[in-house]
Length: 313
Image 1 (cartoon, helix red, strand yellow):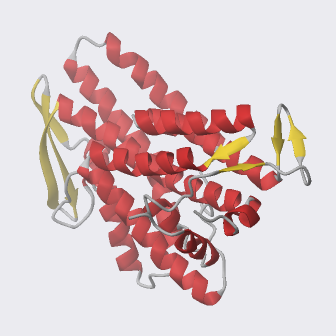
Image 2 (cartoon, one colour):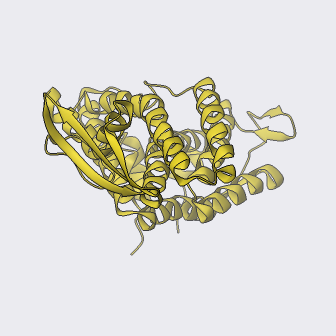
Image 3 (cartoon, one colour):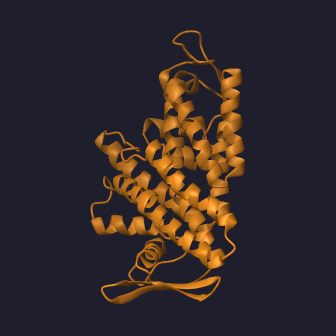
């Protein structure tokens, strides 16, 4: 059963844009031609407003993240959406709906931990939107920013590591490089992820311990240590402090210690370690993709509010 246009509009009016992304049927199937007044022309594209251009550019910036995350169908859907707007001068809301729906489905189908991460983001923002709505305040989803310089710096470091892997004949050397990758990702994108989630949770959750537990839940890939902290943190600590040893050329044991007590231990074959590096990056990318989709959706609604309010099936 399709969600009504009224529910779509109410979600926008109340500021709870989470429901726009969460509902698979929330976007409207129709095209809107740009009206002749209020146009701005930049490059070869005619924009109805600066907000529309900002939405287009924001969605465009998602393409590398989607590609990195292996979301092939989502990447194709967004590319089609942007290409149609660029070439035809209209937004195809049916393609927009497919893009949002495919993103959620494709993320959920990749790994259970990614599905849980997406649910944590949704739930956290829903609670914060509700608090902000009651107080009549807006939510700044990008209060904590990950800049283009940050992206460039991380990509350069991980790019060097990526180029080294194919040339390594020694699996033990590959394990050392993957260990370095985990430490780099945790200390850069992981630290950013903590700050962004903390900013999203602050308005709705007063207790610091509860906020930190939700953050640990998000950062958890396969399981937690006996101290309730994420395996991502324990892997970072184990490699950074040298708490690992080779069982054979392709397998290690890694552990972490807190206050002289062992709180985490795991046996890791090289293929599992490679998976952990990949999943940790994908999970942290969600903290960029999800809010970008919401902000772009809000900007397009503000630009085409009149057309959407008067639309009838």
